[in-house]
Image 1 (cartoon, helix red, strand yellow):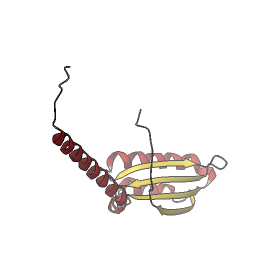
Image 2 (image 1 turned 90 degrees about the vertical axis):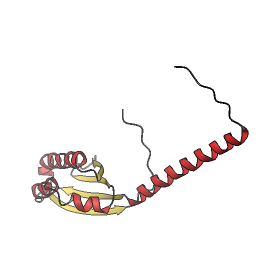
Image 3 (image 1 turned 30 degrees about the vertical axis):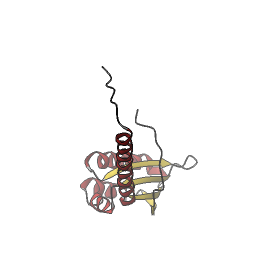
Image 4 (image 1 turned 45 degrees about the vertical axis):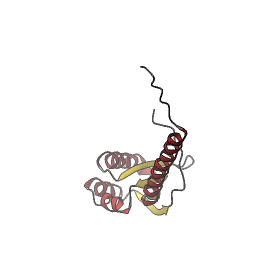
Amino acid sequence: MKAVKIQLSRNSRLILIVAISILMLSFSKHAMAQQKNKMVRLAKIQVDPSQLEKYNTALKEQMTTAVSVEPGVLTYYAVADKSDPSHITILEIYADSAAYKSHIETPHFKKYKETVQHMVKSLELVDVNLIGYARKPDR
């Protein structure tokens, strides 16, 4: 591959720098606007310990299906308390509240709710604001 060297005048370089800066700023504003529209929720669930394996199977099936078939379902992370695995917290991120409303009407979500209705001892839903995130690229 051959590199091409371009000579720019001082004014042309200044215009190019300003144009790149404006472009970067517009992308960052777009990203911030998208982040503000996202719906982020924590689901804090206490499961009947005797049914934990069945619950985890139903949860994983629902999460996998939702992320693969619903464009508005962006993220699911489910974690269990190390000292009491029947205490589960799920981080859910949706493109917006409309995506969430659509999600809870899907057949796979309704199947999940019906399957786990007698397994869940308590459920607390907490809407939160995403204030930042950092992650490595997928490997």
